[in-house]
Every structure is written in C-alpha cells, then in structure tokens.
Image 1 (cartoon, rainbow, N blue to C red):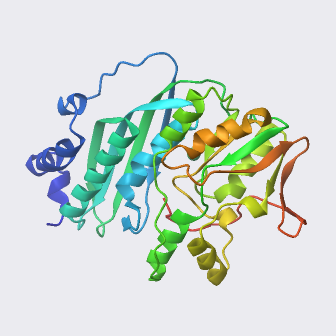
Image 2 (image 1 turned 180 degrees about the vertical axis):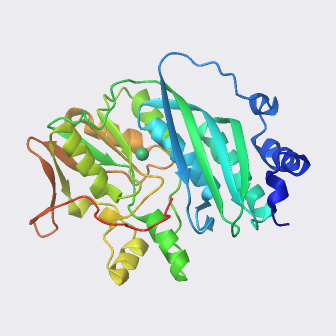
Image 3 (image 1 turned 90 degrees about the vertical axis):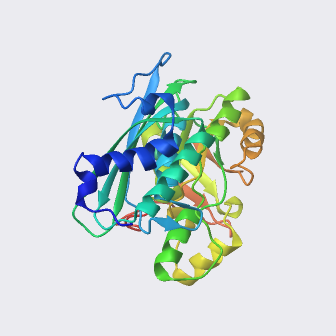
Length: 325
Ligand code: MG
C-alpha cells in the first residue's frame, strides 16, 4: 500500500501509521504514552547529538536507512565515551512511499536499537509531496561514562587503532547504484560494544571517531589538525577485504576516502596499544582491528607506503558519493 497525503493529516490515517508501524515496533513504556515529550531519568553528564539520513537506495546489502539511522546516532554518542540511552526518530515521507517498506525500516530500527541498548522514546512523522522518498532524522542522548575523550586530545606516542576493514559501506552503496553484482555488504553496525570493551579494560582512550563520510583520510586529518599533532599510518597494515580491494582497483577508488558505517578509530597511549587492540578485537564488530599508525610531533597526515615511500594524505575534496548516509 502506498502512502498518500492523508497519512500526514494528523487524523485517522496518521494515527494508524503511528500505531500500527512505529508504536508496534518501537514499543516501550515511554513512547507508548504518546505524550508531547518523553520524560527521562538521566544521571550526570550527557552527550546529545542529531543526524539526518537521506541514503539512496533505501535498502542495500547489509542494511537499510533505518538501521543506518539508529547506528549512526548511537555511534556518534559512543565516540564521546557515552553509553547511548535514548533516541528520537523523525520520519519525512514522500507520498508514494510503500507502507511495507516503512514497516521494514521500523523493524530494522527496533532491532538495531535493541542491540545497542537504546530506547526510541519519541517520534514524529510528516508526509510531503514527492516520489516515494523516505528521510529519517534521529537524535540521541547518552550518559558520559568517561569524559575528556576528544578529537583534540591525541598526543605524540599515541597508537591509532582502526576497528576493521575499510570501504564496505561505500562499495555496497555504489555497487547497488551501478548494478554491479558482488557480495560486498555495508558494514553498518553499532560500535557501543567496542567502546564498552575498551573502557572495561581501563584503556585511557584519548580520542575516538567513527570513520564515516570522507573516510579514514578525513578523520585522521581532523585528529591531526585539532590535536596539533602529526599522524603517520602504515599502508601495509590497513585492513581492506579482497572484494573491496578488487572493486576499488576496477573503479580507481581509494579505500582511504571511502565511507564506512561500522568502523572507528581509537587513539590510545602507545603503552596500552596491545591491550586496547585485544579489547577491540574481542568485540563483535572489531575482529579485524589493527594498529594502523602512530601520533608524532608535527602537523599533517602521512602514510608510509608498501615500498617504504611517504605519501601525504589530505582530506577528501569535492563531493565523494552523494547521499551515502
Ligand atoms: Mg561521527
């Protein structure tokens, strides 16, 4: 069944959409009350963030826009050393969207939220003229477990840990759009269990950031710039799957600039590097983690190449891949 403008009227059809799709799947005592706002118990300092999701296609290998909308916000909270607790979900739906697709998206959001240990406690739905598009905004609140983790807190002699293979989300979306048949799936995943394992092991994490749009190259430049340090990475240890490597070779893409949705860097004191690596690797989404580089005095990002050369790694210029998340 297709959504028409009556679903956005605020009347009976809107009520049906809310009750039979969103409340049915998000189902918790806070959202079920249907108050004007969620009333929440929160202890101490919070992290608070928002992100909007416009990915196309809506469904892709490894996930869909709903899973992405939950994981993206959960991950941004996690990167600040927060335990994600509550999310809100705002849907902007173009007329012509399929009700069944919206329900599948809501089911994925509920599953991802359950895995990440968050509750979706408030929501909103609008219907606009258009051509079947669906856009989602999520905001999230997390309780700070360890303060001081910051992109401006990297220090010389720190080790840089990357939680797994590069480029998978980007390659999955691009493969779908180009009609290329392969097994590459998006890496879209909640990273809170990696952060939990790091903090449970008492790692003195200086900085964490999820590796999303702009890729690893952009994240490392942000860290170097904002921490007034130099970052050096080592090409031969960068994890990239054979499938993604092949895909990149054919299309002339560089995994350093490709988007991920379930990867992060953790910058930790060099003395704790091995312990931190083990903590990441024992996490469900960190099995292929590597120590990929180090922080030095200086500025900028360089990569030691396989042939022992040195290459300057700049930020991503231009568009990258539009509507990737
Ligand atoms: Mg982020």
